[in-house]
Length: 400
Image (cartoon, rainbow, N blue to C red; front, side):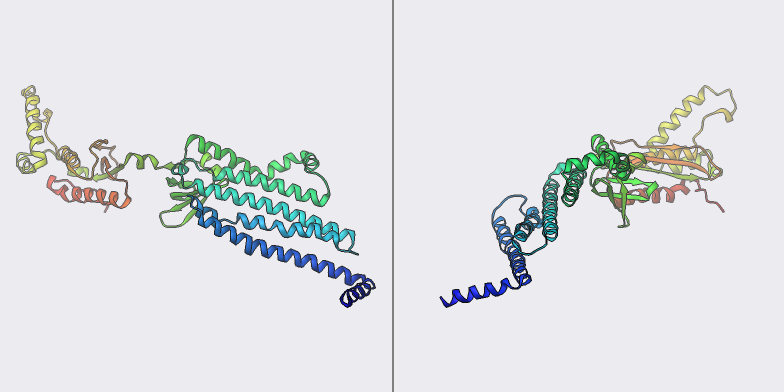
């Protein structure tokens, strides 16, 4: 009985001090919200994480690394503050209204962030699918996020202005032109993302070269607004998505799919070193295993042709040249080289003579797309060809 009497006395004493009653009630509400936040974050969330970790499913790690449950837990203290602030006596109606609006805005934002985390979980789970490289959905999910946050912003603004979303949308109708100007990059990126996906222009993992933006490397990320490329010098290039549609670029995916890579390089031959093959040189060249059969067949062919020109000058007759013989040797050499694809095109041709010599171009395909192996094959071929040129009495053009 004495305890009840003391409580009644304490209540009567507090009634003489309204501010004390207000502070006490407000403190109870705040402490309750803090306790609820602690319970939600440290007990319920951790308990759910432990429960999920014990369940076996394929995307468990993806789910545990995201903050979906933590985002939803933020709603609990906001709800307590929104309903508890009404019970605080002697508090100004303006303050009560402001706290309720802030709490309601916090709930809207927490829901938007939770949906965003859910979309992140979906995207990370989708990226484990082999088809995700050819059909990335990150850009579309970012568009959904943008719409969600725009709706959230409208609801928050409507909460503070005490208007519904549809009224705000109607008032924004006159600002359509301004909004389109503000979001023009987003609109362009949306259209570009649809075109990239429809025409399968690039995929994650593709090697692309974009000289206009100094990008040369592998695509590692594709989002709504940007495409990230890791260059071969380990730098990163961030390209606006719409640039893929408007600017020219090279996609080397076809090379990777085919499994071969083109070699297209020329030897600049000094034109003053080109001459006919005499008998002495012919005997020496027949020692080449690759040329023996060719020279015999070519000599027989020329003899038959020249028989019809027996009454003409020797100058009108067809004769072997050191350049033609070297060209045949190079072609035979490429056909025997283990690093050259036998199914793809392989030829040796002359290009238009220039002031810097006569280009003898090697056009063939290495049977690998590995960069280092490709360069080794190409270098090995040209090392040999440059070294054996003097055997044909040919010289590389070199400017004095």
